[in-house]
Length: 262
Ligand SMILES: [Zn+2]
Image (cartoon, rainbow, N blue to C red; front, side):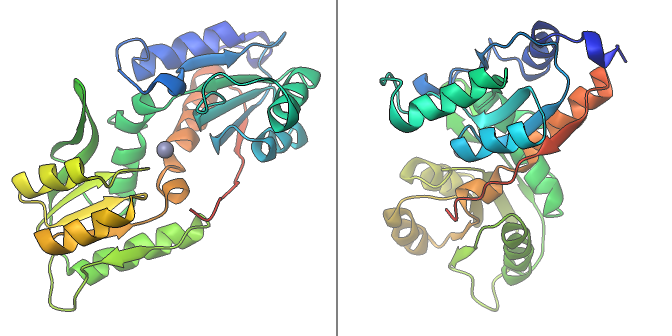
């Protein structure tokens, strides 16, 4: 453990980039993984949150944190003028000397601190292999088990509620049992994911969210889908990063809850 008072943003970011293999993992254009905003520092306290938003930046200010670690960074919407709510985010960050570090797919797929691995563990499921192909990587996880699908749905419902979400379950009928499951957090339901699930004989797909047509396709393919809410499904990874930074650098952290209801 190093002295928290002397840990710089560069130290913490280098540690996270190495842990998460930031430079090796492909991602969407707007993800911009790594340091998104610098500060004068050093890092005194971390706030971790699912999204970089005015609410979570305000939460960081209230916690007196000067590093905000998020899963969804500031640049999803692409290039835009720094005006209105975008200006407000930047103004608060710079006024309070708060740095931002983002990790999207590198955090989703990490076998220990990743959203998918941790959600599986939370639901009592043991991943056996990857699921959810994106370019050269698999974002999610899959495995085998034998609970009644309704029991698994209850576990998802309980977790989702705790994180401010709401479960939407498709294809969960009383006699149904889950033998092969797959998890893909966030916007994990898609036609491609359902095709991949069918090919892998997955009978239950657990996701954050997905478009309306995925519920119809799932029903026709005979796959149960548990939509836990995008936000709720991705609260575990950033918490694990907070704990990891405390362990490595002795820097205290707190989770800023800001559920969107979706
Ligand atoms: Zn997401």
